[in-house]
Length: 180
Image (cartoon, rainbow, N blue to C red; front, side):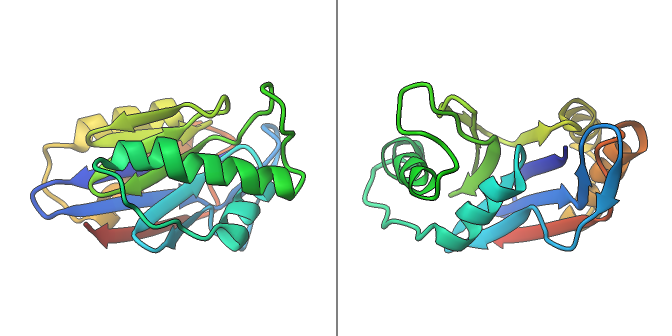
Protein backbone atom coordinates (compact mmCIF):
# COMPACT_ATOMS: atom_id res chain seq x y z
CA UNK A 1 0.00 0.00 0.00
CA UNK A 2 2.74 2.47 0.71
CA UNK A 3 6.27 3.36 1.65
CA UNK A 4 7.13 5.25 4.81
CA UNK A 5 10.77 5.99 5.62
CA UNK A 6 12.45 7.45 8.66
CA UNK A 7 16.08 8.41 9.08
CA UNK A 8 18.20 10.28 11.60
CA UNK A 9 21.04 12.71 10.94
CA UNK A 10 22.84 12.52 14.28
CA UNK A 11 25.44 15.17 13.33
CA UNK A 12 22.70 17.76 12.65
CA UNK A 13 20.31 16.37 15.33
CA UNK A 14 17.51 16.06 12.75
CA UNK A 15 14.86 13.39 12.23
CA UNK A 16 13.18 13.03 8.84
CA UNK A 17 10.06 11.07 8.00
CA UNK A 18 8.66 10.77 4.49
CA UNK A 19 5.91 8.91 2.71
CA UNK A 20 4.36 8.47 -0.68
CA UNK A 21 0.87 9.61 -1.73
CA UNK A 22 -0.57 6.56 -3.49
CA UNK A 23 -3.76 4.81 -2.46
CA UNK A 24 -3.49 1.25 -3.74
CA UNK A 25 -4.95 -2.21 -3.50
CA UNK A 26 -1.71 -3.76 -4.76
CA UNK A 27 -2.93 -3.92 -8.36
CA UNK A 28 -4.17 -0.42 -9.12
CA UNK A 29 -3.57 2.94 -7.48
CA UNK A 30 -4.53 6.59 -7.43
CA UNK A 31 -2.76 9.59 -5.94
CA UNK A 32 -4.46 10.82 -2.76
CA UNK A 33 -4.61 14.31 -1.26
CA UNK A 34 -3.85 13.39 2.36
CA UNK A 35 -0.26 12.76 3.53
CA UNK A 36 0.47 9.49 5.34
CA UNK A 37 2.87 11.33 7.66
CA UNK A 38 2.27 13.97 10.32
CA UNK A 39 3.75 15.66 13.39
CA UNK A 40 2.26 15.74 16.89
CA UNK A 41 4.28 17.68 19.43
CA UNK A 42 7.85 16.41 19.20
CA UNK A 43 6.89 13.12 17.55
CA UNK A 44 6.83 12.35 13.82
CA UNK A 45 4.37 9.69 12.61
CA UNK A 46 4.01 7.73 9.38
CA UNK A 47 1.50 4.95 8.80
CA UNK A 48 0.67 2.04 6.53
CA UNK A 49 -2.03 -0.65 6.67
CA UNK A 50 -5.17 1.48 6.54
CA UNK A 51 -6.09 5.08 5.92
CA UNK A 52 -8.56 4.82 8.81
CA UNK A 53 -5.74 3.77 11.14
CA UNK A 54 -3.79 6.90 10.21
CA UNK A 55 -6.85 9.16 10.41
CA UNK A 56 -7.58 8.04 13.96
CA UNK A 57 -3.97 8.61 15.01
CA UNK A 58 -3.77 12.00 13.34
CA UNK A 59 -7.09 13.39 14.55
CA UNK A 60 -7.72 11.78 17.95
CA UNK A 61 -4.30 11.20 19.50
CA UNK A 62 -3.24 13.68 22.17
CA UNK A 63 0.40 13.16 23.06
CA UNK A 64 0.89 12.25 26.73
CA UNK A 65 3.57 13.96 28.79
CA UNK A 66 6.89 12.13 28.76
CA UNK A 67 8.06 11.44 32.33
CA UNK A 68 10.15 8.35 31.53
CA UNK A 69 13.92 7.99 31.71
CA UNK A 70 14.13 6.65 28.17
CA UNK A 71 12.27 7.38 24.96
CA UNK A 72 11.83 3.62 24.43
CA UNK A 73 10.09 3.24 27.80
CA UNK A 74 7.82 6.16 26.92
CA UNK A 75 6.85 4.49 23.63
CA UNK A 76 6.19 1.07 25.20
CA UNK A 77 4.58 2.15 28.47
CA UNK A 78 2.73 5.35 27.58
CA UNK A 79 2.27 6.12 23.89
CA UNK A 80 1.46 2.68 22.44
CA UNK A 81 -1.08 1.75 25.16
CA UNK A 82 -2.79 5.09 24.53
CA UNK A 83 -2.83 4.41 20.78
CA UNK A 84 -4.38 1.01 21.42
CA UNK A 85 -7.10 2.55 23.59
CA UNK A 86 -7.90 5.21 20.99
CA UNK A 87 -8.09 2.61 18.21
CA UNK A 88 -10.46 0.50 20.35
CA UNK A 89 -12.64 3.53 21.14
CA UNK A 90 -13.00 4.30 17.44
CA UNK A 91 -13.75 0.67 16.50
CA UNK A 92 -10.58 0.18 14.47
CA UNK A 93 -9.49 -2.79 16.57
CA UNK A 94 -10.93 -5.00 19.29
CA UNK A 95 -9.91 -5.08 22.92
CA UNK A 96 -8.92 -8.76 23.11
CA UNK A 97 -5.35 -10.05 23.07
CA UNK A 98 -5.63 -10.92 19.36
CA UNK A 99 -6.48 -7.34 18.35
CA UNK A 100 -4.09 -5.94 15.74
CA UNK A 101 -2.59 -2.53 15.14
CA UNK A 102 -1.64 -0.92 11.88
CA UNK A 103 2.07 -0.76 11.07
CA UNK A 104 3.72 2.60 11.53
CA UNK A 105 6.91 4.51 12.22
CA UNK A 106 7.29 7.00 15.08
CA UNK A 107 10.33 9.23 15.46
CA UNK A 108 11.17 10.72 18.84
CA UNK A 109 14.29 12.06 20.59
CA UNK A 110 16.63 10.92 17.81
CA UNK A 111 15.32 7.37 17.45
CA UNK A 112 13.13 5.60 14.92
CA UNK A 113 10.44 3.28 16.29
CA UNK A 114 8.34 0.76 14.43
CA UNK A 115 4.94 -0.18 15.82
CA UNK A 116 4.18 -3.65 14.50
CA UNK A 117 0.73 -5.13 14.02
CA UNK A 118 1.04 -7.20 17.23
CA UNK A 119 1.73 -3.99 19.27
CA UNK A 120 5.47 -4.67 19.50
CA UNK A 121 7.69 -1.60 19.53
CA UNK A 122 11.09 -1.89 17.86
CA UNK A 123 13.73 0.82 18.32
CA UNK A 124 16.19 1.63 15.54
CA UNK A 125 19.22 3.89 15.69
CA UNK A 126 19.33 5.46 12.22
CA UNK A 127 16.94 4.19 9.52
CA UNK A 128 13.70 2.29 9.07
CA UNK A 129 11.09 1.83 6.39
CA UNK A 130 7.70 0.11 6.39
CA UNK A 131 5.08 -0.73 3.82
CA UNK A 132 5.16 -2.44 0.46
CA UNK A 133 8.20 -0.39 -0.59
CA UNK A 134 10.16 -1.30 2.56
CA UNK A 135 12.86 -3.48 0.99
CA UNK A 136 13.69 -1.12 -1.87
CA UNK A 137 13.65 1.92 0.42
CA UNK A 138 15.90 0.28 3.01
CA UNK A 139 18.41 -0.66 0.34
CA UNK A 140 18.36 2.85 -1.10
CA UNK A 141 18.85 4.44 2.33
CA UNK A 142 21.82 2.17 3.04
CA UNK A 143 23.35 2.91 -0.38
CA UNK A 144 22.97 6.67 0.16
CA UNK A 145 23.94 6.91 3.84
CA UNK A 146 27.51 8.15 3.30
CA UNK A 147 26.72 10.53 0.42
CA UNK A 148 26.27 14.14 1.59
CA UNK A 149 22.89 15.63 0.59
CA UNK A 150 19.92 17.36 2.14
CA UNK A 151 17.31 15.32 3.97
CA UNK A 152 14.70 16.36 1.41
CA UNK A 153 16.82 15.17 -1.52
CA UNK A 154 17.64 11.88 0.25
CA UNK A 155 13.97 11.23 1.02
CA UNK A 156 12.88 11.99 -2.54
CA UNK A 157 15.54 9.71 -4.06
CA UNK A 158 14.60 6.84 -1.74
CA UNK A 159 10.83 7.15 -2.29
CA UNK A 160 11.25 7.63 -6.03
CA UNK A 161 13.36 4.44 -6.18
CA UNK A 162 10.63 2.52 -4.36
CA UNK A 163 7.92 3.95 -6.62
CA UNK A 164 9.86 2.94 -9.71
CA UNK A 165 9.76 -0.78 -8.89
CA UNK A 166 6.90 -1.28 -6.41
CA UNK A 167 3.46 -0.87 -8.02
CA UNK A 168 1.78 0.17 -4.76
CA UNK A 169 4.14 3.12 -4.09
CA UNK A 170 3.97 6.52 -5.81
CA UNK A 171 1.76 9.56 -6.22
CA UNK A 172 4.24 12.12 -4.93
CA UNK A 173 6.18 12.47 -1.68
CA UNK A 174 5.62 14.21 1.64
CA UNK A 175 8.59 14.99 3.90
CA UNK A 176 8.83 16.37 7.45
CA UNK A 177 12.13 17.13 9.19
CA UNK A 178 12.30 17.97 12.88
CA UNK A 179 15.18 18.93 15.17
CA UNK A 180 15.52 16.86 18.30
